[in-house]
Length: 513
Image 1: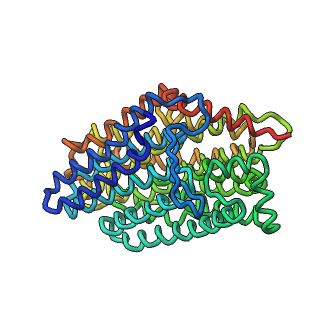
Image 2 (image 1 turned 45 degrees about the vertical axis):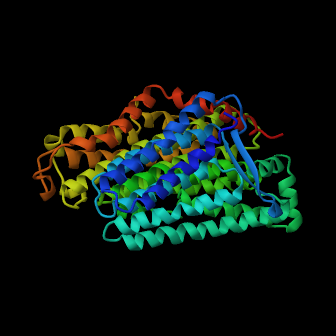
Image 3 (image 1 turned 180 degrees about the vertical axis):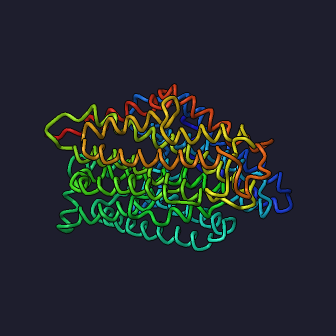
């Protein structure tokens, strides 16, 4: 195991597939799709030896690869994997193949589409595994390039505007983060996450930043925070999300919500949390209101949508802000006089579960809306459909499972994460949990309205007249996602056992003297 660079293989194998597609200029669309699917499955294949040799009891990174890269700047090629990274690697390995399967019948420039998708997969994996900011940031920014072209070239009528808005927002946020890490490098001489976390833990990092300038710790924190907040996105940095998700082709929407949005949450956990505990604790009371804005206003905005893809996009904003609510609630309680370990452990465990489970349910819902759009000749208004359950009972059943998973129905995967988040937040900041319940109510209203108007009642709308059930390859994206929704709903320990010791260690450092 030590002689095989498994983590590098994880990151670069999809890029090798993209390179192969670039060379095979005369291959058929079917051949291109098969090659892309096989290379996308490499993530799951390479995850098997990682799972078999992974030790959850070890808190630090495992399978570490660290080689000198740019010696003059003290930059190393540094990869590592812990329970958080492993969970997100698995999520990427699941969502990418099903997103490609969802795009199986795409004919226009299929080779380019598949190559861009593999580039996007490799960049996302690099973000989840890199432990030095220099190449972590390269992966972070490289993910924007294929995502931009996937939206612009294969998106809907407003795709060009949505693609540019997506890139401008995220690059703008990244510029602030880059400036923040440049300041960290000036103060410490390193951009290694582990070294910076160690300096932050003993107070040296804050001292070094303060020595450069009195307001530098807060300024650097703010720069890194903005870059991550735009990516999630945290309200009110979210305005790029609805058009990007709505105009992207179905497979790209699935990846954007299932994987790319998790890069921001990962950054909060990997960077902001360990490097800036003091500024994060000081800002947490205000940040709680921003997370609540995303939860409540996102849900109510979803209620007002007539475009089904925009509705699911706002639903994604709502669900991801539950994760940030839990993180900010834990950060606000840090340093308190009362023990917060039990509630903090619940909140953090719920956050990690929600990250994974939302990736499954949101990707499935975007695929279902994509099926509705394809069947109806491009329509996706909530008033364009009615009685789909009668015309396509299997599709309706599978879509219903995804919808109730997103709703948090007990027995499905979405319930456990949301329950733990509310359990933790209620134990730390009860008022915030009470306000967040408004978001739960609005979520139930718009999802049940979607279910009732599209799938039940008499057939209505021009789009439902000749609606047919799923057939052939159309089952492939939904079946594995729905199966995992049931499996993780009744056996969430399959995930929690990967990160429970890590969560316990995080919570154990929360009560300060």
